[in-house]
Amino acid sequence: MSPAPRRHYAWTVLLLCFFAILCAQGVRLSFGAFVRPWQDAFDVSRGTITLIGSLSFLVYGGSQPFVGRTVDRFGIRRTLVVSALLVAAGLALSAAAQSPAQLAFTYGLVASLGFGGASGVAASVAVTYWFTQRRGLAFALVEAGFGAGQLVLVPLALLAISSLGWRETLVGGALLLSVVVAPTLARWLRDRPEDLGLEPIGGPHPPEAAAPAPVPGATGAAGRATPPADGFRGLLRSRAFWVLAAPFFVCGLTTTGFVDTHLIPLAQDRGIPSATTGLAVALLAAANVTGILASGPLADRVDNRLLLAGLYGTRGLSFVALYFLAGGPALLAFALLFGLVDFSTVAPTQWLAARYVEPRTVGLAFGCLNAIHQLGSAIGAWLPGVAFDASGSYDEVMIAAAAVLGVASLTCLALPRPARPASSPGAPGRSPRRPTPDLPAAGL
Image (cartoon, rainbow, N blue to C red; front, side, top):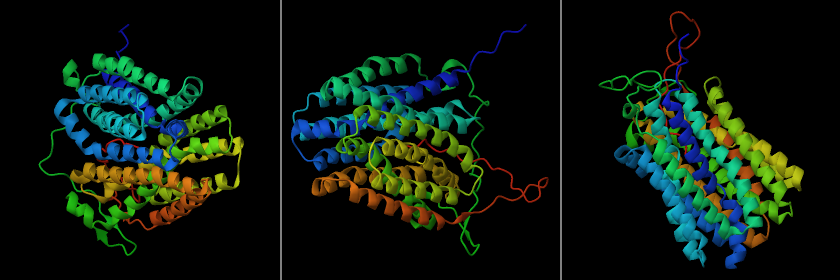
């Protein structure tokens, strides 16, 4: 009997990237757990603390293009190891901060540069190097690291802050990144299959063609073909790109901006126990992972304009429910509903972006979309804090969030229809599936 084949090392690389994202992004998504402790410790307004969150989002989003170049030049392993150590340094310095200004530098700048490096950009490059087949599954698993980090580390941060204190919790995060994550990546992660004398899963990468194959254009309501956008100037002139970018801005505004920053303080303001709040965050994160894994196959089978409209509309309804209902059960129901439609917007947005632009412009297009998303996140983290300081509640913010999500849902219906590829001879009425250009994992 022949021995069982050994597992390909690509899966080890994927697991290590998942682990790095889980730890680094789980720490980043724990920001909401520190809002009230920092507010009390420094005796400042909530708007002041959430302004630090806005700075973090801007630094994180703005670093993404540079992270891509860093990975190209220095490799995946070095980028992730140095980024993990940078996060650890930022957290350790934040634990010693004596003022919001110091916290803005240590967390908003130093740690956030590390968050940007230990993000989906490096992991997506790893997937590209190690997989020529099954990339959709690999990208989905990498993206699930964001939800898994939220599931594991946010409730743990809440528990640690309540039992140990916020400074000790930050030191614990620094030790996790510097003593566990960075050494593990340095020891086991490899940049390319060639480093181990292997080929990617699916075989060698095909040689690059002299010119990229055209991507189907987009057709408007009148049926006229809209040429795919090519290059940065093409993106600026592309109606399809901007109609797609507007809801993705609202996505950042209401998700990583408002919910990830303010849901925990909102629950604490309503007197909901920490255990229930932690359960709600864990439930939201688990629903996030479920939504991520389900949205990929759905994006291949349904009209993504309708899918996005439904996702954003459901988000809006979840805010309406949270506005009218109070208490722990309502928070748990909101977490489940919102989580299912949270990160799940990424896959259909990627799908449409790939068809609205030329293949050579796909990476640029999604990088720009991600930057717009992070701009929305920065505004969504800061303005609700200012509104809370003015009114003493988040009620007006929730109504505003529901309204802009309703507009985002309707905007998705105005997206141009991507043209269908030509029908294959053997399948009348059916369109053969064309390969989709690879996209970087989103840095939510």
